Length: 56
Image 1 (cartoon, one colour):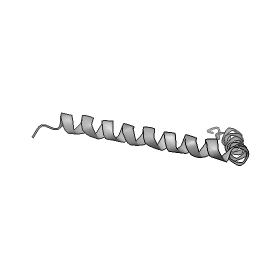
Image 2 (cartoon, helix red, strand yellow):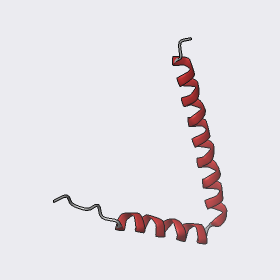
Image 3 (cartoon, one colour):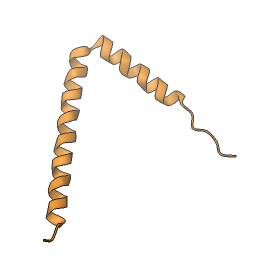
Image 4 (tube, one colour):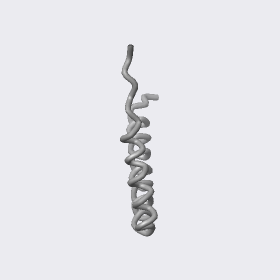
């Protein structure tokens, strides 16, 4: 009835990430640190936005 999603793109992306981590661990660590900083900044901005909307 409903088509099932194909799983091979996820597996391919995972394999590429694993190869990247094993071939270039320093760059992978730097990428993770950079992405965690971006996530933290996004969460802070979202929190500030939500508190600005709060009328109390």
